[in-house]
Length: 91
Image (cartoon, rainbow, N blue to C red):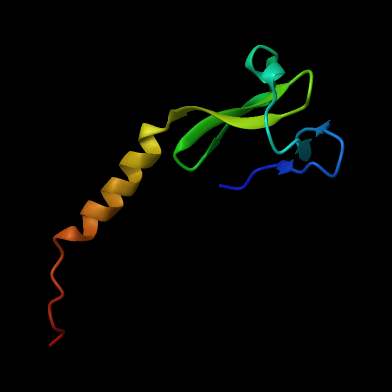
């Protein structure tokens, strides 16, 4: 799963959502109580998520809200759709 977050300690934290977020590589003690949502809720593959960013230090994470059952069921349907097919020789 691709991310817009670049984790580095060589650049200052920056919020350029939705293109790029530059985040420190590690969270700080401030992150426990000072996180805020950044942008809108998104879906990618089986997951629904949004980004959370610390207002104090800029540490950012992708926060998974839930797994999308529809995407998972689609994958299962595809897998089971071919599971019992026979490879019959062509005459």
